[in-house]
Amino acid sequence: MDNLYTLKHVGMTSITQFRARQSDYIAAAQREPVEITSRGVGSRAVVVSPDFYDRAVQALEEQADIRAAAEARNETDPRTPHADVMAEFDL
Image (tube, rainbow, N blue to C red; front, side, top):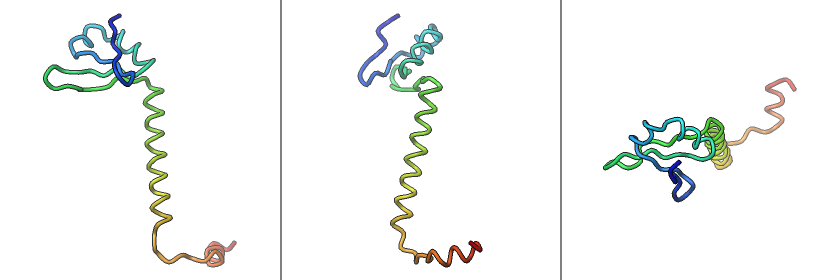
């Protein structure tokens, strides 16, 4: 197999090369992302393993949760006393 890997451990190949050797590049994507490039356009796509994709989506969701929590802590709305919340839910 060609040396596909460049900086940041991302394999690079052209769309033509990818079409000709799809199974090789999909196998390589199980180890690390493979970037698909197009002459004159540059980067067109990145092929990753399902595990990598799931971890990336989870990390993005966690970052969104972290940002939302930080925003909630910075809100200036008046706070509801604990006793009032307990009373509202008959606890």
